[in-house]
Image 1 (cartoon, helix red, strand yellow):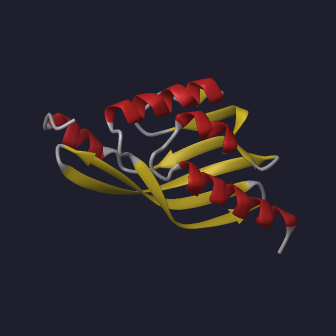
Image 2 (cartoon, helix red, strand yellow; image 1 turned 90 degrees about the horizontal axis):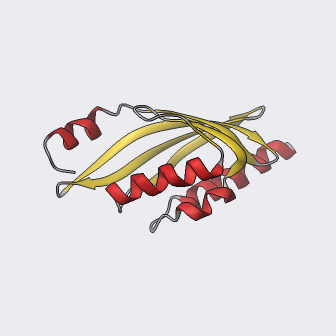
Length: 131
């Protein structure tokens, strides 16, 4: 295996560790570069670690049990794709939402993350007043 694949494996292991409950937003620097840009459906993009931490803090204040499990991943060049399931309880019901994150890595950390998922289940649960 190439050196990059090992680096990608390490990155995915750190990503998986970060998202195990209880999620601690202060650990985001283990996965993201200082200048990381995050793009998420339904949310404004963030730039830098402090904005990322604050975004995760808001998410976890709304849904304290939010976490992610990694289903599988692949890497090519400086890109890592992680297929995952997001888990969150809203109004007493567990939602499991499939998603894919595309990371661009630099020096073993994510410098850009674009997340792909359908936010409709979250929006519908919140619209029912269950949040």
